Length: 623
Image 1 (spheres, helix red, strand yellow):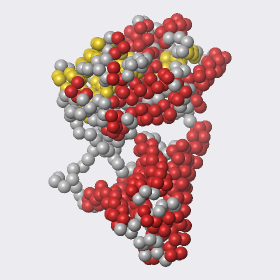
Image 2 (image 1 turned 180 degrees about the vertical axis):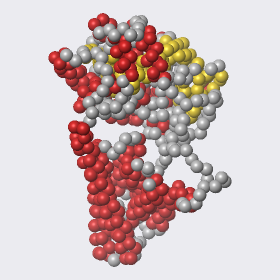
Image 3 (image 1 turned 135 degrees about the vertical axis):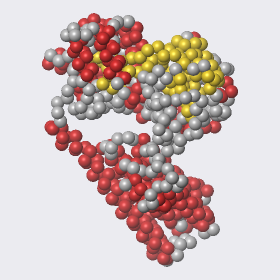
Image 4 (image 1 turned 180 degrees about the horizontal axis):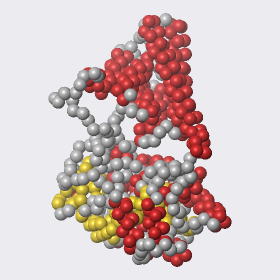
């Protein structure tokens, strides 16, 4: 129940913050290493005021619903809102995340209070709990799936740890109360009231831990229980060429290449459609496409890599110059994997799902993605590149450039996908203070379909997007206002619902690195500026970085970032590429689309020619 979740979260936050206030009386602080003189009785009312304000703020958003409960809406009282994402929990995952957020807030308040009292050990412990709780809250808030095994186990460990923490606090407080008759400034009666609240919190978190454990058990068993009843996957299976980038962000290329070689041998022995495997560290996509296509007149391509690898392959398919253009699927091995997310192939790859992914190719639906020409005076002496996803200028491109240079200098530090993402945060954090690109609006000129577009004053970065996923799954445009902390719009053109095959680009901006972090965390949207089909950009003066599809310019340069050369470019659509969208029933499911396979069969038996095939697939993709 949405309304019930609001009330429950507010109540939980009240109890947690109140419990935090009760955990810092004078005798207890002495037991955990805080000097007794550091917590003077005169400080407790001030801290209580802070806790009361924090708790009251948690209940404030619920007041309109309390007032409206059971009262029909009237024209001047409250307008019915469209469905949108909320800060309040509506699913089990969000419910767990709300608890984690409440603990992050409460422990953060206690940490700040302990820091002011010079209790460094307590401040450090509470700061650690706050960061852990906040990290889990962000993870759960961004997850759009059901409570899977990993998330349920994480929730179980978190709530079990909190149960143990509360139990320790109860024991310590009970000993203090029984020994002195009062706890610091708290009288005996108040001490026992606090103990009662803490015991209820302990029981509640123990139940949450038990529930999370049950969900983990259910999630781990449900696929096995129903595996036998699933229908055999349908679809038309063609020869497949797998192009593997060993150096992609997740560093799983070697393991995947070995698995693909085994699968190729099995298919050859079983007489199934061929599976070709090409290592992009030893050959180019163009050479692999020409070799495989000379043997198999009809085939599909599966790109095993990140967004940069996909762009490379699509460019080489264009260079083939043949009437038959293979459709392209993605097996995500990169860091952000934005194109894979948009096309429904997921945000990462699990080796145990390789066979299911290969089977899903026959049930995938054809999709189109626009390709954009970016030409002009670009860094590194280049004059033209192609764009599929997005480009960025300013603060985000700066972090990308530093990340790419660091990866080139020390590749061992990027052995894991999560670690690679962490380096983005570390390298972007100095901009909190430096604000290197605070004058970007004064140095940049943008036109969209011939109309000048003004950057907000003080804006430190902007992005031009073709797809709705940016920086690992964030929707900067956010046309539904789904972000719980929406940013004020500066839209200067007409705009329609964005799509990756509509012949239009979206221009968005970020105010600073904090705003960028909020957008990448899914808590805010970008500043929407413009939408159009012809965009020109000019950046005057040195020191402004540029990246296209996650690949920054000047990676190999030995000069500092302040020496980056100015640039100007124009963007226009040059066509579209045939992609494959993940099956509607999921990669491991039985549903999917077979119309694309029927078109391939019609081409194989001579019913249609290659030009008709291409026209049909494009019509199907736009239907």
